[in-house]
Length: 451
Image (cartoon, rainbow, N blue to C red; front, side, top):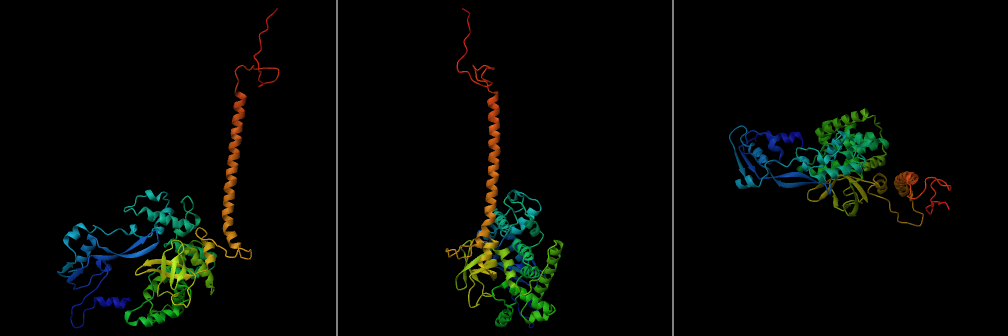
């Protein structure tokens, strides 16, 4: 909601009638409205909870804590005496509600936190002294995600790519997109996309003008990619002089666009400090989509039905959101990657981009490989060979190391046995014989007696 509409909350009614305000959790601590006498507390709130097995955020309706309840009571009578009506019993308050809200570190994706701790030199994260220790499954899942992205090596230590990623104050996947974009020569576009993803949705859709807002949004749509749609929005706003009235006319939040512009400037400074080139790809959007795949190949889905997809790794059914640029295209792309998975009424993918499946095999060989359908030799098997080449080299190097180690061990054993053979003296064997040193006499020599 734009700031001017939000400001109406604080205005008094023209004819002095009573005003009813329906508020979310934000009103508990962040807002004070004059003249509120009565507060009705339902005893529930929506909490964002991360499921590490599926990699999905879900807004779950959860009973509030005692601290929440006290905050809500405090909204009544800020400027005078007031009343709070709680829709639950005192017994429920004392016995069923937690004392404090569940800390966010225990219900969020920890990939960025794990990367930060690794960059600070923390070796064993499972024994790290957190104030509120998160579940081990969350930490292990985050470490696995970082290993897949190439930020951690097989021993769990930070790689050079991981060191670069830790310099960016954002999700590791988005940092990987920026690093890959330098190689694909589209870093200027990727800077804009990442900065637009770092702020909430810039599209404004008021209930009384939904059709107009949807029509305005469709003008910005780039087929096959929500990420490129965001890039188009920013570029159009830039070409119109970053004007607020233009943004308002096209149902865009000017405040969020300005925030994205600030984020972009900060990220640009970080890239220059890291000596990463900022190059524009012009109108070649394929390289931009490939750079997006480099960061989000672990969040890929393939088509199953009309508007329905299934996650390639977990098999979880997912859906295109109706506001996506891919929704209602006339055809459904076979493979897509998505920025985030959110559970509301369905499992919806947010910020989706259609991709070439060969990019998945190239950029994410940990998960994907190419299976050729025609085995008569006419098929292009070059890509699968290249994917396996690195693995073969590593296997061969490991085999050679094992062989050389075995040879050294055999030589040491032979030397030890030969030295022990020279030192051992068998009882009944003379020290010096005519046959030569070390020769064994089969019969003990008899003593010569004179006749």
